[in-house]
Structure formats: structure tokens, C-alpha cells
Amino acid sequence: MNSSTPIVVATTQNNFVGTNRTIFVQFSHDMDASSINSSTFVVQGVAGSVSYDAANRIGVFKAAADFAINTVYRYTITTGARDSQGVHLPQAFAFAFRTRSTLDLSPPTVRVISQGCVSPDGSIQVVFDEAMESSTINTSTFLVAGLTGTVTYDPLTRIASFTPTGGFAANTTYNGTITTGVTDQGGVALASDFHFTFTTCPENHPPSFCSYTKGGYAGPGAPGQFFDAHYADTFENDLTIGINDFSGPQHHARWTADDTGATSLKSFLTSAAGGASSAFTADYVNPTATSNGILPEQTATLTLNIGFSGVASDPPGFGDLKLKNTGTSLDGATVNDILAFANNALAGNGLPSGFTFSSLNDLIDNINQSWDDCNQSDWGKQHLE
Image (tube, rainbow, N blue to C red; front, side, top):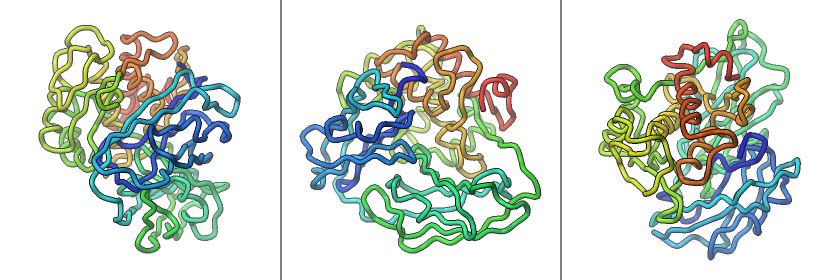
């Protein structure tokens, strides 16, 4: 596996899935839409239809009937899936989810991500409070009056972005609308159109981001306080590293979205490394330490840095940064992609080409420090764009 081969980088939450929801996977590459179908996206024992959202690289499975309540379902993306250049997945990707006891009937809500004025060469972004049907978030439902542009949706952070053709005018106020045409993954629309205004800056501003180290999140300072304030809401369906296939052959560690999970995760992030970095050999719930070295701690920290991007005062987009000039097989991969490679390694699915567990740990450590306390490191200047 490397940045030249497509992989699955995001998928449906593991737990508490509404029985009427669609199931999705997001790929690292633009895919050949004809290869994303009911033969390559298979939910065991369930009939349904498959579609592909090319704008966001997302495949969607819609069950023919509602899923059963409180039930584990397994699903696979086979090696028949290929990207737009004809490159197939290097291996099948297997996942699972557990349904809850109810339908998803509540309407989603949305808010503007406020970072002060918007850079004229930038984007305006909004964030939803639940997983959305990506194909419904488009140029017909995310509008900025008087402008045309492109619209994208990130399922990891639930952030939608509008980027105008030719940029925004400087020092100008714009009116935006998210219409009731957008729906969540249960097919429920916004209760009403969402209207908002924003103002652009007098001149272009270089993008900035925030990341924190594992010790920062576990400590008493500002990163630890940010963690305490936002962990449960941001990771309301738990935080998982590795792959949770519910007692299948892959392995994971999971922290629940409550005080027990938060306290355990903070202890985990600063626990003494037990042994060399390696794949998990069992499944763990709310672990406070690991015998699999530092890589699990760095991977959990990267999950926090990506998840918190766009939350409160943290600027959005950290996961979209791309790796460059490292001379490794992951050059060209986004930070989101690199998290997926790390999760596959911890799950027991192998390492990216040319990497060891130690070198993958070193890479993720550098990424976690690349915008530490919102200040770009020298490594970040050289190797992220």
C-alpha cells in the first residue's frame, strides 16, 4: 500500500447506526464509478443499491429495507474497486457496524465555522451536527449569492466547503444559504433553510492550522482544556484506532464518548511505551496503556488533531494537508490518508510500502507536531502543503 494505490480512508461509524441510514466509504483516489457497485461494495446478508459520489470520492450503500435493530453487520469493499487510472485496491477492506434500536428521524443542524474574516482566496465552511448524505451537499444546496464555485464535504469532520470560482472579492460581505435539499444519512432534511452572512478580509491570509502533541492533550494546559470541553461532542460515537470489526480478525482500541473514555484516553496518551510499536493482537475498550509501543498513542493523537480541526477556535482543514518531499511512498497522501494507513497497520493489515512501525510512528509524530500550539514547525514547512 502507498499513495499511488487507492485505499479506504473513512467509513460509517461503528456504533449506534440508525436502522434507516445509508452506509458509506470514502476513497483516497478518484474512483472509476462503474467499479463501485453491488459486487464490490457488499453488506453481508443485505440487499441494496450502491451509488458513487464522484465529487467527494464516496461510495454509498442503501439497504432495500431498514436494518434490524441492535445488530452487527459486516461489509467489504473488494479488490474489484479501481481508481480512475485503473489501479485496483491493493487488498479487500472489511468493516462492521452495529445498529441502534431506532430510526434516524431527527433533522440535522448546521452552523458556520467562524474564524474571523474569510481570506479572499479561501473557502467558506459550515459544519453539520451529524453524518450527512454527501451527494446532497452540492452547488444546488450550498449557495453564496452572486457566485459560482465548487462544493465539497468531508465525512470525517462533517464539514462542507464552498470555494468560489476566481475567489471572493476582498473586504466584502456575502450572503450564504444551506437549503433543505441537504439530508442526513437517514434521508432527513434540514428543518428549514439556513441563512448566514460572512465578510472577507482586506487581503489574502496564508492558511493556518492547530495541532497538539499527545502530552499536550493529556496535560492541564490549553490543549488539555480543549480536549475536556470538546471530546465527548466531537467523538460522540467513540474514538477508535485500528479497525473495529466486532471480534473479527482485525483489531482495535476504542474509547467511549463519556468521562470514563476521556479519562482513560488521557492516561493512554502519556503511558509508558510497552515494547516496540506493532499491530494490535486483541481488542481493547478504554485502555489506559498499551504493550504495542508508541504508534497507538501517536495515532490516537492524530485522530484527535483531525477530529478537532474546525471545532471552536481550531481552524478547519488539518486533515486535508498533503505530505511532500519526504522521499517515501506516502508523498502525495493527505493527513487523513496517513491516518487510514496507520489504522490499517494497527489492525494487522500491513504497513505502507517501505515503512516500518518505527518509521511510521516517526512520521505521525512529526505531523502531530507540525502545527503545535498553532505554530508551524520547520518540518511542517518543508513537508506539508
